[in-house]
Image 1 (cartoon, rainbow, N blue to C red):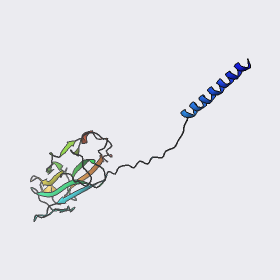
Image 2 (cartoon, helix red, strand yellow; image 1 turned 90 degrees about the vertical axis):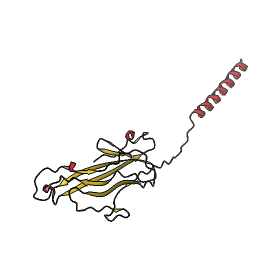
Image 3 (cartoon, rainbow, N blue to C red; image 1 turned 135 degrees about the vertical axis):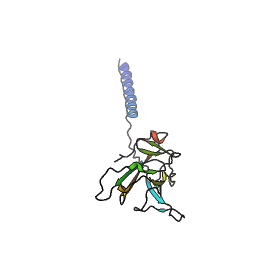
Length: 189
């Protein structure tokens, strides 16, 4: 009988040791610290003009005197100055501030731009660059000229035409296969 008790005790001890080893195997714990660096999406809006005498483009000046029926050189593009590929979109807002003392409703349709539809797609009031923009590259211009209709009458004398351009970018990686599928755009405001 003592022999049977001894064998049962040995078996119980062996099973306890095996169970402890199994429990230790399943409860192993370790700590690892991972460092994840975020990408860098950064762009620069570029506005240039070609001087009247020709030559190389120069930065666009804010105030230019124009007459109805003329065109002004204004080249708008975006340069990727970040480290990641980016999807690009541009908002263009036209407005006319009538001269002091002039009453009436200004017609912004009298001001047009020569949109580059080969490289840009319009959707919901924005112009989207069709290709991802690699670091260091510049988009094809959205437009190169601003035209003032010959139908602009005396009401527009001494008025100011404003063409406000705002560019935005979002990352390309894991963000749609086309610019129109991309998400994460900053607010349009």
